[in-house]
Length: 319
Image (cartoon, rainbow, N blue to C red):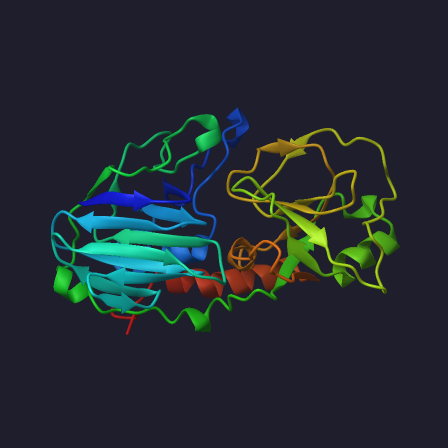
């Protein structure tokens, strides 16, 4: 159990997502960085779908109301626990009354704070994930007291673990994001396809949990927009997290965790599951992003390797 004593930015409870309700227009939601979210729970032997605090673009301070163990993962933050500073991707023991401060630095957007046993919150449509636009759950605020379930593992055995993040997820502000072609790839000219893959982008300041607008960086060797071969309107169809839409201005928009369930802009590609965390942690105006096409089989194999590590860790694999 913890009490939030100070909070800036956006903090919500998220789990792995609200699945099975897209046909009713309800987004999946869940963590923006699924890898960091799952690793935070893995470090504490929590069930894979346990709720965590997702902190975005701000800081949080909370006080433990009973002895517990906390893990913090993500990119762009550091952790102060009582009088010590801890690195990310570790677990640490927090005594009742101690204060933890998750502090914003640079190099990312989202942090995930998990507690031994997982946070207890209302289950709505089979999920504890918050979807602010739809009024499902609410943003966390100063004064909130968050309950937790009783962990299955002794607290002392959970403390002082670490996760070898660099072996599985190369977070960077110059990532190459892997994609597979989307259903409307043939709506773009060969020149438009080349422009998409040869250009460098940064994240626009106008981004949120619904979508990442990208801005093409100036280059003498590339066009300013992604050229279309078909300019007619597309009948709205289903979308998923990672869908890359090209609207009329020719600049990509990547759908993220709170993406609408349908959209009418043509899609040129879809970010692979394994690359979504890299994109999620790109900073606005700082990042330099490129795309690379891979096959479905390559995308599945890479995701399988990563998912096995965070979803089904072997005993004491955190050493």
